[in-house]
Amino acid sequence: MTIERIFIVQAAGGPQRECESITVIAGSGIEGDRYFGKHDEPGQNISLIEAEELEAFMREQARPSDVSVSRRNLVTRGVRLNELVGQEFFIGDVRLRGVELCEPCLGLGSALASPQLPAASVVKQLLHRAGLRADVLSSGVIARGAKLAKPG
Image 1 (cartoon, rainbow, N blue to C red):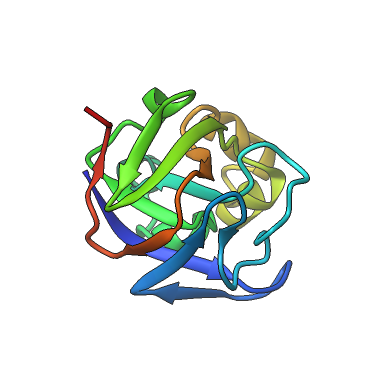
Image 2: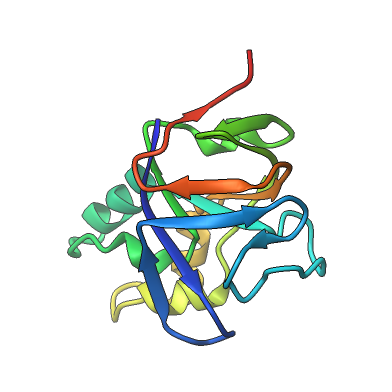
């Protein structure tokens, strides 16, 4: 149950930047990310997605795997994120709370669409598979390779 890749986007619609580590601030999110300090939606501090779900989707569509296309902040491996909705968990020493599923949007659908699979169909196929939105409850650093664990 690890963090495999980390991404931020500094401005809406801007390019993603892959990071080795990020600094997160309780209640505000990721320093340098476009959503830092915003509270427009629940769980806006940080988003996660399972590498396995993206890889399975890419295999189903006979496409090369590219987990960065999700535009989620953290790509995990070895954890079922849907089970963390409403739960507190740790990534390294940072405490988070899973708020809600990060359901696919039309932007993700468009990024993964193909002549055989329109964007709306991508969204439908990734429903309940596109990750988790979470609140940051304690400040700290999250680095690639950090372990994800439930308290206790």
